[in-house]
Length: 87
Image (cartoon, rainbow, N blue to C red; front, side, top):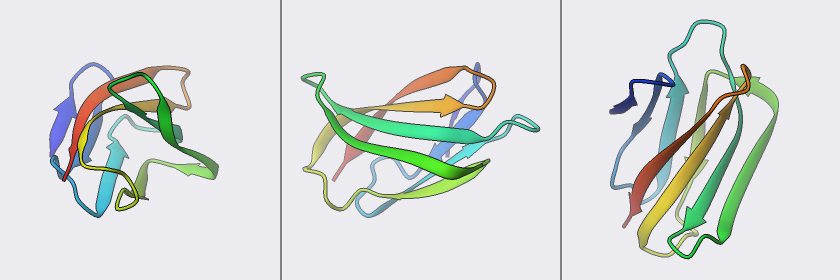
């Protein structure tokens, strides 16, 4: 798993082909929303969670292969931006 040390987000696998796992390891912080942007800045996938939790599984099999920016919004108001490769 890859760890963002500032926001305490881990995500795996990277590269991903089917299912991306995303987890907040900050106690009491849940993930409210996840967005995927292509390298042209276009949002290609958005997941808003009606029942936020500290971990989510996201199906990525509908996205084209390539590099994406993954933006993860936490319940404490912070967001994390990560690079992700989809195979």
